[in-house]
Image 1 (tube, rainbow, N blue to C red):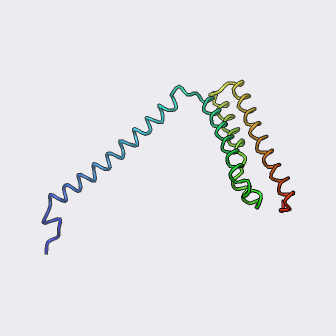
Image 2 (cartoon, helix red, strand yellow):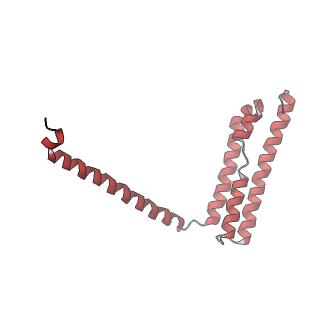
Image 3 (cartoon, rainbow, N blue to C red):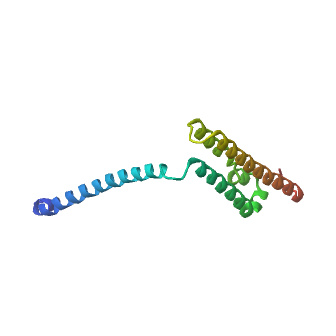
Length: 141
């Protein structure tokens, strides 16, 4: 009894060609994505503007999470530690890393670190509100 592929060698040949075509497309896409990433990094958007936007996004995210999940935070401190994290710490590391690599100036570093301080103050204010409200409602702190 002959196998299917020995009866139909043309189908086997087409399957091999198809497989090679898929492999070569994936390599081409990977190379193109690396080139695009390099172009994005070299684009006109500076590191300073990118970091500034990241801080603004973190502030918006912190405010939005606090408004949406405030009741959840009041009920359990566990949810507070899960969903209401300090975002300024990672941003500070990024700012200092860019400064060490000379991608931003001293003035820009100071401005960004001040924005990180403002973000940390917002986080502390929100935590203080939660603690006071939890105390008023008789929940455990």
